[in-house]
Amino acid sequence: MGRRIVFVLAALLLLGLAGAAAWRLTQQPGPAPLYASGNLLVNPGFQEDADGDRRPDGWEAGPAAELSDWTILPEPGGHSLRLTGSASYVRSAPVFVWPGKRYTLSLQALADAPTPARLQVAFLWEDTRREVCARATSDWMPVPSRRWRSLSFQAVAPPDAVGMTVLLRPAGDDPVYLDDLRLSESGVRLEPFPDYGQAALAFTVDWETAMGGLIHSRSDDGYNPATAEARGEAMRQGTENLLSLFARYGIRGTWFAAGYALLPGNPSGDDFGHPLYAWASQANGWRDDHWLTTPWFADDPHGTSESHPAWYFGDLVPRLLAAHQEIASHTFGHLYLGLASPEELRADLQRWNAVARAAGVPSARSLAFPWGASLGMPDASYDVLEALGYLAVTRTYHEPRGRSQYWILPPDDLFHLRTVPGHPNLWAFPDHYFPGRPEDLPGAKAVVDRVLLLRGVTSLWAHSEEVASPEQVAAWEELLAYSAERRSSGLWIAPLTEIVRYRNALCQVEMETRERPGYLELRVRNVSRETLSGLTLTFPAPVRRATLQGASYSDFRQDQLRLPELPAGASARLKVWLEGWEAEP
Ligand SMILES: [Zn+2]
Image (cartoon, rainbow, N blue to C red; front, side):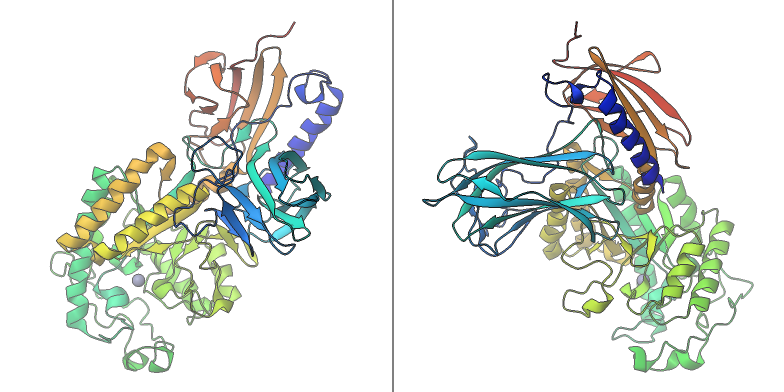
């Protein structure tokens, strides 16, 4: 809905453009059109090929789409991309787009053949589900024989588009070379990430005591209270370790708590409704049928976190809150949501909220599926999540060799948000498991590199018991240090729900831009119900000077400017002077 507001405004602006001679876009002849600087494409000159497979990183390369050492760019080690054959193609990583904005792709192309070839460009507009909702296709553009030629194509993003990929393909089977691609957005760009960020990463923890997935284990241990208690102790130890690591690197994580873990104890012997879950059976993957006749919370020792520290983590909650960590939901009773009924889910999540409230924790807005068991979720259970105010789910089922009919996020794209089918307001948040073994470290670092390369969104996670041994602590420390260092390259590290809330609120920002002689005048208004902190704008040239509500303002770097905190309903009025933009007569 918010995007529509923005679109209407943008459309008004475009109409305004048609009539107002003051707008640079309409000046003929005159200076170049107003386009935000920077290139929205990832790896636009095909330089990056970290794994050396001769396919450009960040691009989906179709058949016979391969790197060539032939390049028109001056960079040493540069590449171009060769498409050989009319079924060959290359497709960019997704780009965040704004409805009503104009996007222009320019590139260099050459046909390595005695006769010319042709090339087609398509902008594939995507909805929140990352499905193509519209496309804009160029004519077949002539590519000269053995001579580089500049080509360009432009189109306006339609109302429902939130993303876009660029697709390029040749006509005929002769090799066509591509290089030096550039995708720009008209006007001033409102960046998808705050604080000069390029990508978002959440560190998340599945946080449960002996009562969570431990006593209800589906693994080889089966029902084993002694093992569950020992692992509950490791969960507690891991919490201490992770809290001090997070503090060292200034990281706020998201702790997906089984709600029972938030209890300070249960000396009064609450049985939480005495639930029996008939689905927790051997037929459904448990080791025995223990839970068919035993109430789910029967092992509760009815003690306190002092007498039974492996069972209740209520004493740790104030410390998490004091460290500004997010506490979110892993359900109250660690339910298998692909098997539980919508009614069981509703009762369980309401209990989570009640226990959280008693512990001073806000109602949950995000959920991590216990056992990664989103497979089998009824549509009505997603309705329950939405009705209770959930904005995001994670630990969705995405086993690469699993049953693909249950994938909400495909395993080959765990770097972008997508909404749950039929639930356009519920985001599925991608995740990568890092169990803290030294041998998993290169893979986890590669996740950090890749989310930055793709300018995407993802998370790394573990159970807190996987940060217990000195070896695990060392591995986690190395990963956190590596990630924290990448903040200077634009990595935004934040709690999972904060990333989702920012994404939602961003689409309810209105921006009006007016070109005045020698400077730009902007009004940015936050019409969402969230406070927006760190909103970042990209201008067509480096910022020389700025004022905010009439006073001098200096939070800018090169061609970008960061706004101060913008509470719900607030506006910022900016004047911005750009390098090379002298006052016109
Ligand atoms: Zn769990």
